[in-house]
Image (cartoon, rainbow, N blue to C red; front, top):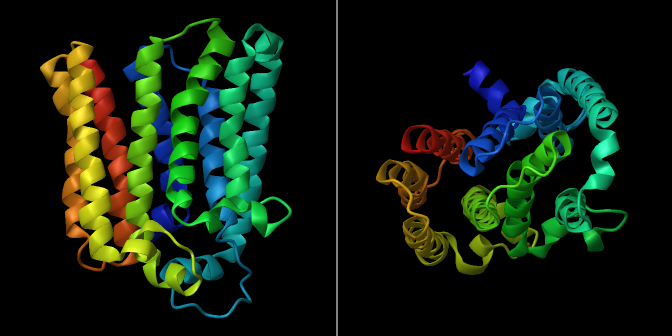
Length: 298
């Protein structure tokens, strides 16, 4: 249990998700892998970014929330981890800049606009200077912002890095747009499902998320399940137009089926570790299925 709590409470599992989803992009879009330094940078950045919100001093009051209490009890480890990971990420970023900085002027402006929108959305999610710029307080938009940042990190940024390292190695434009939107919607649905655990707190803070607006059951029945059904249907239409093999189609459809099953099971309240292990774990399932589909399905 302590190992599981460490892996999921510390956000190290999110770093693994960022790595696997980035690798899936290379397989799905048939582009080269980025350099190891880039993947180190993404993993460390994700862990540090998510941990900021939970860092508290050891002198903080005892909390009934298991994750908050874990951070209180491991405050010193968290501080050291954040420092070490930040230094490793900074070193990786400098390495990439030294090796490929000369290529920064070789890419079109539109690429920089799309890629820059990802960290900007990530910063606005936490808030810059004023709570008015805090996207977490936008209620129903919150899940779409989270989905956009994740999809951008694992779908757009790896391709941008590959272009810097190898030149204009562009995937099929239609395929890349579809892949980004598919990841955006998948991560958004995942974020909405995760909001179910915060239903009471969000309602008390008048944060109008989907769950607060519609209630638990209506969110599942009238938001999550319809979105998933539409997503699966649109995927099969696109896959057919791209003449995907049956094997690849099946592998790519499995994560949607898993989302549907888990969404239906959320009619019952679950402990926080369930959300961290199962719901976040669906992103790992998606990455593995996407890689397997590309490898075995051509």
